[in-house]
Length: 131
Image (spheres, rainbow, N blue to C red):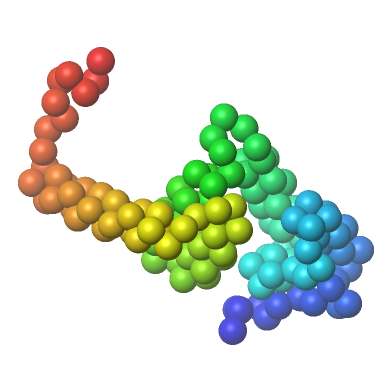
């Protein structure tokens, strides 16, 4: 259960409902997921986070599938079960296949393993990587 509970649309003050409405309109959905319902207890954080997500995840130089897969990779590394589920669903909606998911997780696992080895061995950065 969320620390402060989840704020349903019917119980939300107008400033929260405005953000909820924008989330649903932007995403073309008729529901608000639990992440936003949990953040709604702090309307300023809710609005700021939603605006940042909209900006960062908007179409740009990086395609939507890649953005979702990067988000998924970071979520797996940070062990955020909620974000893994959310961004796996979003990546699948954007076209991620089972094979892409499996390969992504292999890369995430390898990166985490080698990152820990580099840290443990305190490997100096090669000069040629710095140019």
